[in-house]
Structures are given as structure tokens and as C-alpha cells.
Length: 181
Length: 52
Image (cartoon, rainbow over all chains, first blue to last red; front, side):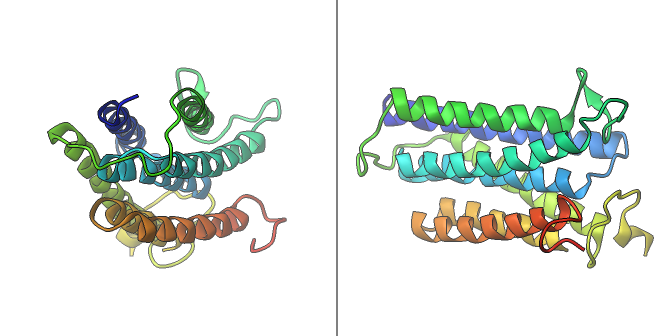
């Protein structure tokens, strides 16, 4: 895989992460479903997942960047699987609404597992030697992907500040603490 | 506030990955990872260390 193709693939990964964060935001605002602490941690793990692709776009492909993706994906998979297990007993309605029959934390687990598999495939079938990666030329599509993710991180930081205020986040949030005074 | 710090931490890691060098970005990434693990222990259950 050429560095140019690797950069394009990583930009695609950033758009996928942005799509996940945008969908979560849409559900939060449109259906007034405030994210729980574990839901917020899964969003944090999705943001952590973006560090590797941005490093690849900026500094060229490297197995080190895929290592960061693996670590972030394991973190996210641990958090989302914990939430799946919390609601796995028969009769438990789960937390929040569903999308195509699965709760969002189940989708999150599948997404993190997919990121792990994708990183594994990249490392096995498209190996890169350390130092081979050079900063490739990037265009508008790659820059837009990076700034989209960064903008969504800023919006998430603002949203969680409104939701939790300056104290610890409640386990089942029902209102924006900072807006309620 | 605790999750605000987590988002700002990884936001800084993204910024450093884009504008700074890989080394500071990776350093901030691992700081965020440790902080997120602490948050996980805090919120995953009430029977783990850091839970209250």
C-alpha cells in the first residue's frame, strides 16, 4: 500500500469516527437522551481512536500509529463490553434507545472490534517498516476530516460541561446540570 | 468536569498530532489513556477501586 493510499484510508477512518460522534450527538439533541458516564467514556475512546489516523495523515504511515489505534480500540471495547454485560440479563430493557435493534453500546463494541480487526489486517497484509513513512501530500479531503473530528471533540467537551457541570457526572443524567443552575 | 478533562486531553493529543510532533502527541495520548482507565474504574461499577 502506497503512503498516499494509507493517508486516504486514514482520512476515511476519521470520517467514520466523525459519523459515529455525529450520530451520538444527533440522538442526544433530537431525542433528549443524555449520555451516561459509560456512554461518555465510549465517546472519549472514539476520540482516542482518531489520534493514530491523524498522525498518519500528518507524518506518514507507521506501525506505531496503528499501535495507538489498537490501544484505543481495546479501551473502547472494554468499556462498551462492560455496558453490554450490565444489561445482558433477560428482561433488562437496556440503557437508552436502540438503532436497528441494537443499543448504542452494542454498536460501539462492534465498531471497536472492527477497528481492531482493521488495524490487524493493515499490520499483517500491508506491513510498513519503521522509518519508511514519509509525510505525504495531503489535500482538502484529509484536512476537512481532521478539522471535522477536532470540531466534534470541542462540541463534545462543551456538551459534557453543560451536562455534568463542575461536579461528578450522575449515573443516570436527566438534565443539563449547568443549564438548570 | 471529569469527562470534560478527558475530552480536552484527547483533543490536545489530536492537536499535537496535527500541529506538533508525534512524540508529544503520543505522550498526551497515554496520559489520557491512564485518566480514562481511572474514570472507567470510577464508573464501571461500585465494587472497583476508585468507585464511590
